[in-house]
Length: 554
Ligand code: NAP
Image (cartoon, rainbow, N blue to C red; front, side, top):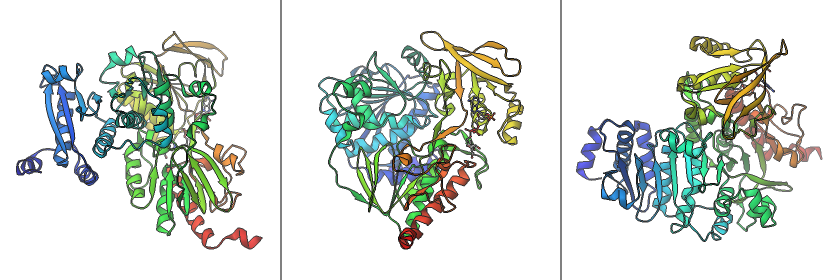
């Protein structure tokens, strides 16, 4: 850093909080090559998005001498050269790559920018061998455009899939991250109803964060992965066959929610070498919880914030990997775990695989998913600002999400099947304070709409049996969760009648050396209990590895 930069850094009022600056400085110490951030603004000094991006890029450049920032307006020659018409826009190393952020990265997108800086600087895509092999088939240009929102924790993962492809094939692949909230016309042109929404071409798109290999396959084939695999005469998992050297651990933890992350800390502190692997994003359900008010020590903390704190703590001890679905587990003398990216061997296995959103199973629900129907208020709430939505459910999640939507300026009404909520009193009180309307004793029977989007629902009053139509622009469904037990069932772990994993007080399953923790075991399903169960499972694994109880019985 030059003396001039040092002076500026000391005197400025920072957008990035002090803790964040320290953390980024640390991360940026690992940068190898130079990274050029090229910002285009409208030229209007009052534009808040322009001002934010300008400041953010400037601050990033002050945190590492490998990062530089330069600024243009959309009227400059550079804008014509790089075909920039929308503002604000940020290009990353435009001489070598075509990576573009359209809109100010004000929330989760900032995470995608930091990861992009890192990958670009390293010049390494980090794609798995299977993805690289698929990408070799690409012979023409692709420009995946990923629509995101500031509150969507899945969005950075999907955009990073695209960035990795750009780095691996800069001559053929370009990538764009578009903030759907800042560009409503563009979002409406491509019918973005749920984020991340990836527009692979003018006519082919996909919704949700995808495992990397699926993203690459769909981008190359311009059709959904199942159809592309069928055409090649392959089973879904056959796309991932490859040779890699096995990594050896004492304990493998599947699932990076609060239970899995805590298990990682406790395992390593007990002296067990561990790895935490998640099929999707780190944090599980907590990552999509707008606010948490019942985790001891935190009066009110954003779900994603809590996840970041927990993850940083776990990473001090253990390896944490995301977006890596497990394909197969073999239990023999050793435990073997296979993913698309690696083979892992261990003495013990902790299943902290959490749960997934429960569906209503009514007409229109699947058809309009991503076009007005959503499970994730943190991700999709922004797209309903000023619009009318229904929130179905009466538990803690439904009320927390309804309050979040109200806060974003969405006109939300709750529909609940009974005349009393299951949610805690504090949330019910907040609902009353905010004046959120409730339609009691009612079930949503059908979701209807036109060719593009939801227009309303058919409601049945469960007391009178009367049906009525309720117009709305969106339906959020928050009616609980179903335990993710597919992997557990595959290896013969016993389940309870409600489909959760059966465990003893030490979180041991019926299979020696296999443990379970968190929502996948049922119970009260709180963050605080998940954390406790993760710790217990890791300590039981430690005890059993030292002192194998199943061998004594034999
Ligand atoms: P939940 O507590 O199981 O509540 C589900 C709600 O959906 C209930 O009100 C239920 O109605 C309703 N429902 C279920 N099936 C339905 C159907 N087919 N049609 C219409 N309504 C239906 O689920 P949740 O709110 O997702 O919470 C899950 C767990 O996570 C809970 O243990 C909760 O306490 C916990 N959680 C914790 C935190 C935190 O720790 N900070 C935050 C959020 C959630 P009935 O009431 O009539 O059964």
